[in-house]
Length: 504
Image 1: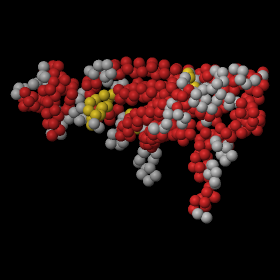
Image 2: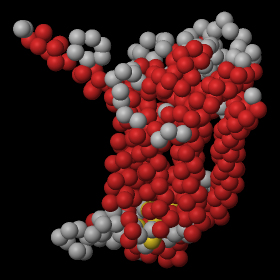
Image 3: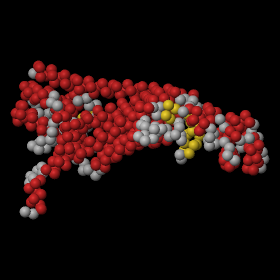
Image 4: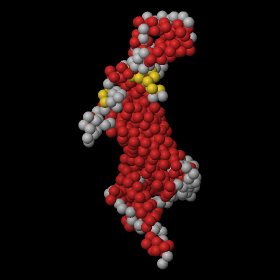
């Protein structure tokens, strides 16, 4: 017997071979069981009721089908195991329906429906629930950021460009910037949610059906906000997946950037943030260590979430414009994992930010170092001495270099040094008093005069903070309304099924 014959004898000579089962069918079955079981039965309920309402199924037949649907839906789906007699969970449940109500009724529940539109509907139901949960956690992070912002309107710190200390700002100004990025992430996630929350049911395989069905009736029963009107689009369109993946990628990429900042800020060298004890780990051999593992894992998980979401985009790329349910069987778990990891990152960082201690004195001291207020010295020369800006900038640069060579900070500069440098640059001396030098070297003054819209002045930051608190509250109310609407749609559908069974 040749190698080919020996292999086929062991693996099986007909579909599905053992290798196909172990590598594909069993993992796909487990994913369907874990993620789609509940959504499958919601779709059954809505579809059967619609068929009855439209007179396609009799009330008596619909009652028998729905009784079996309710009975099967109460089984402990976590205990279900792959059975080689059935291709997947869908066919296993259909076989169990057949055992209960017979082949004819079990088959009739699928009138005017295909695995295609049913599969996409289940994916959308599960995905909208996860998106809504993810948005809720993003809102929590925004709320936490605003809470901490309010405590640090006057907490001075250096702002960095090119990883170098650049100018003084406040911790509130910095955290508001993170909030504003996260607020835009919220908008992107809502956009994905609204495109996901549309019903494909009624598209059947790809061209609808000859039966007189009502797509809107099923849409409303399942709490969808709209219908994917074009039936080809309902089956072939995958941009709802891409948009969800892309929004997740942007969210985690944005978070990863400032998480990296946090890791630096809580080093002993920076000594700006102290992570609360529940979120640090002591070294097994070095008892002085306070390892910020919560932040480290957040950084790693954010990267992993991006990778899973990117896998979704890659898997859809160049997929033919048609039914991709089989591709989605492999694809969906990547998206679920990306969102699950994102939620873990959001939970961790919300806890870290809410409980961390801020070393205000250390941050203020760092804002007094490295000549980072010298922009204000140049500005003062323009405003008060009438010197052209580029000339003033050159003078400030020469002063910084001279101070560095002499081991001095800006607040150490004397009027004599100003006169010396201005004489070299301009050919004439410019005098600044000790009081003027003290003012332009003070990071608090630097911040206070920056009252332009969006600036770090405490008054301006307070204005921005109040606006963002209002918007976040509105977003939270909108989220709660959507959350309640989905729950009410599900309760209403289940209630109608029970009333139908009792009354039919």
